[in-house]
Length: 226
Image 1: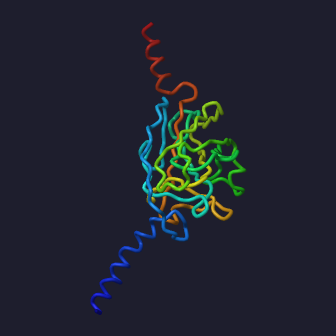
Image 2: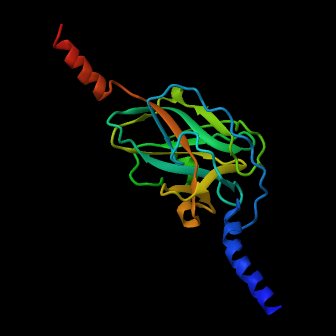
């Protein structure tokens, strides 16, 4: 019996950390897995795209709930393209009802990696959106909501940081921490997801604003042969 008891204890110690990570709440509340099939990717044309998961339309394997993990999910990105960008579209794997006025948020000309206190109300740009998947209980949320922000005219100068994110009205997509820092608004401050072994999944697409360096150089070369 003693050997059996030891085996059970060892098994519990091995399995429990993995189970603890399969949660949507920071208090370790187990999540009920009911994944939704990924939807078709957006077909919008773009010059630049970034996803915190490392690949475009990355499918989340974890998720965080609005009340147990955080209300807003955000990340900060450096525009190191060599060109100014105009933001075109956001992609958020999430589920739930329509958001309020601060559904999507953007901070520009960042002085640091995270925005100041005050939550989403300090954003430079914001707007409402309705998640494509209305079910707030699906876990992990793998259905992307694509938000067109091209009409907002949000310019990101080359060499500057910008921060963007969304209002988590149900569950927001995540993965195990992959080296990309993201934050969730939790109990009145921006709580680093890294401290919990996670990275929130957020996606942005943009077009070059103005004339890219490559086009300018090519035009100059062609001009020599007129």
